[in-house]
Length: 162
Image (cartoon, rainbow, N blue to C red; front, side):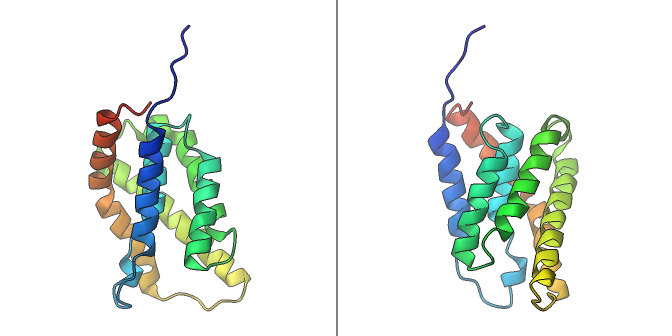
């Protein structure tokens, strides 16, 4: 049995950095609820494509960065992304077999779970309930999933990320 070294770690980091930049870009108040959870989509992809490299720990770390960047309760996004990463890693072999439209439905369920966890945390700290538009973001993420998947898959293949 031969052990091959992992390659492409910088590409994985670069995609997370780009996702964090897209997360922090200012948007008009009217379209802010429709901003997809870029960091979650990238995390889901890498947990499916390279579960031996990206998992719960990376999800936790990226979540802490999002918490600091968005000035939310420290650990809120970390918990959400760690749970998302855990579920994705556990189911990655099944999810990868699905056609893209079925994967998008699975991604929608993961993103809805994240929003639900966020709502529970916000309720626990007595923040007001979010508007109905708060739930639009997972659906935007679902619609973007096929393109994100194709772009990240091509990057992974081009740079031979293992």
